[in-house]
Image 1: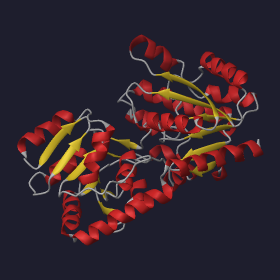
Image 2: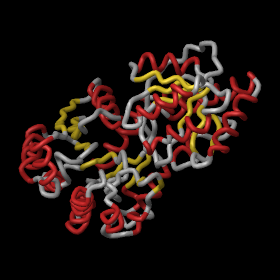
Image 3: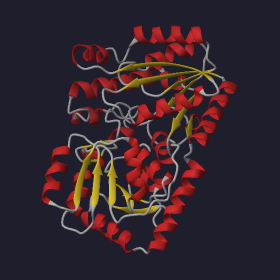
Image 4: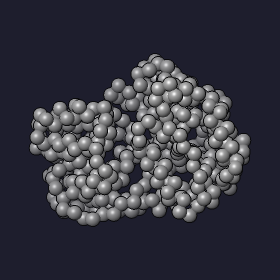
Length: 384
C-alpha cells in the first residue's frame, strides 16, 4: 500500500510527535510511505504561519503537488495546527484520494484543544457553532486574538464543508468519540473509528518498591501540584519525572517534604526502568487526556495505575482490576486512594499488575495497532 502521512510538529516535542514517528516506522517496514512535515516557529515567522492558518493555500498546494506525484492509496493527517491549516484537506480531496485524520485532541471543537481552562474542565464550546465563550475567556494562551483566529479557522471550514471531506476520523477512545458525536461538529458518527495508541515494551518482572511514580509534563492541567500538596504531610513516597511551567513549584515542595523526590527529565529507557520497580503510576490529570502513553507503558510493565476519575482515565483504569481511581479536585480522595493501594496485600497487587499486562497485550501492542490502522485504510479505499 502507498501511504502519505502529514504532520505539523509543535515547538516542543509531545505525544503526538511520538505517535506519528512510531506509525511511520512501523508502516514503512511493509509499505511504501512518504511523509510531509513542518514545525511551528517562533517570532516573525511564527506570526506569518499563524496568520496564514485559516487559508494556507500556498502550503496546501505544495503538499497537494507532492501527493499527486506520489499517488498514494490514502493520505493520513495527524496535526494541522498551525503551520499547515485545514485548507490542504480540500486540495487533497480534489485529487480523489481518501483522507484519514487522527484527532489527538479536541481542537476541532474548541480553541483550548484540551477542554480545560482556568483550572477546570471547559465544555462550553461543545454546544456552540462558533466558540464565543472560549473567545471571551481567551482560553488559548490567554490571548483574544489567538483564540478568535483558531476558533474562526475551524468554524469557517465547517461552513465550507471541509470536515466532511475527511473520509474517516480516528479517535483514541469511546469517550473522545462521544464528545465529538454529541457536539455541534457537523460530521456523522459513522465517520469516527476508535483506535488507541500503542507501545512495544517488554516486562522484566523486577522487585517492587513502595514508591509511587509520576511521569509527565509539570503543568496545571496535569494536576501535579494538587497531588503533591495532598501527599505533602503523609508517609507516601513519590518520584516525579518531567519538566514544565510548574517545575519551580515542584522543586519548592520537594525542598519542604522529604517524601517527594523530583527527578527531572530522563530518557525513555530510564523511565521504563523506574516503572518496572514502582508500586504504581499516579496520573492526577484534571483535564481530558487523549491517551497517556505513560499509562500504556505502565500496563506493559505490569505496573498498576492510580488515576483521576476523569474522561478516558475512567475507561482505562478500572478500580481493583488495573488500579484505583480518585477525584483529583479532592485532596482527601487522593490520599484515600493511595492509602487503599498501600493497604492491599502483595498478592492483590501482583494480580492487578498481571491484569494490566493482559490488558496491554490485548489492546495496546504496536502489531495490533497497525492491523487496525491498515483495516481503516482499506475500508476508506473501498468506499472512496
